[in-house]
Length: 386
Image 1 (cartoon, rainbow, N blue to C red):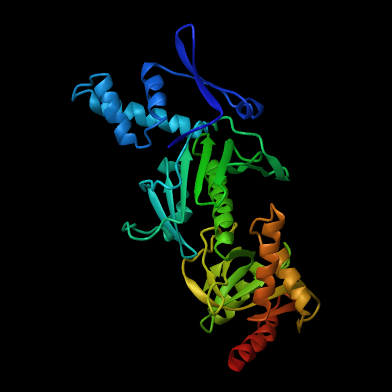
Image 2: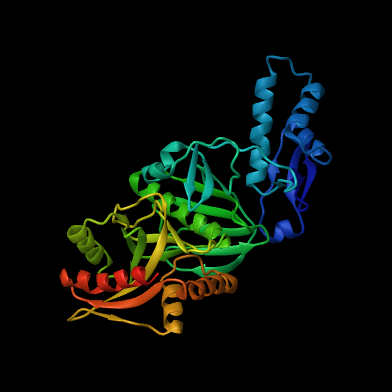
């Protein structure tokens, strides 16, 4: 644990305070009033970095009895957590921290540790929950805090609309959700491995859904760093391959995949969002818990067959696309973050890398069953040629 360089300990009329100065004042950080124990702990933090050692020093200094020791441990732990949330105390990245979570998820080959009040966890995570054995590395730690966020350093605005505000500062990223049912804010470390989500509201169905989608954005940020990209699309499994049908809203993704299910009894994988994995020799698709309003969400990993872009038409026809058009269309239908130029370039490069490895085409189609036969012939030919 490392003390912030932007705070000083001082006394006002005999009462200890931690007050900001320099950049802390410029960032409008707020001060903290301390008691005698808090003042002593702050002084210890100048040399001690282990919570266990701090408790031992305090127990000796204040002559705590055996009966008082459990409460002392709790008080010190809560005080240190308060300083962390306020940005006054930071973890030393070289010091491994213990992992404890209320729910573990396995999504896209990544392990997510989710901590906090379980009433804030969406039931849509249940199919993706796993039992953690302690051997797998935790890729992302997400802590849900059921209270309003503390003040934070100001940041540069990267993206702003009625539903999302993204800020970047020296500590990472801050995501604000002005359209949420109650106060909701997420803070991501620069590499996306650590997330704090402040959710100050009752766990109503609407607010739990807001939190569910805030977690999605944090996950997709991390996934992008790991070579995993989310494509707005509906999917089904046919001949042991996943086929993604994408297009603008109203293009008929649900209608077309529904025809495949009705006519050929193919399993539907996800009704709205699929995760592309380009790390292996063969592109694959991972199921996701997020599926829009379709309620079609399946965990698993499958080989990717192709991406078909739908367009409404008076008759059914498959059209080939130039490579640059394929790349542009895939990147435009990705919902992986594009807050920065680097992120936009990652999406565009990933779209270009996948074009030469799978089928990418446009299906101009009606809503009639004949549309299935038209594209099915192309999919069969693609698989037979492989």
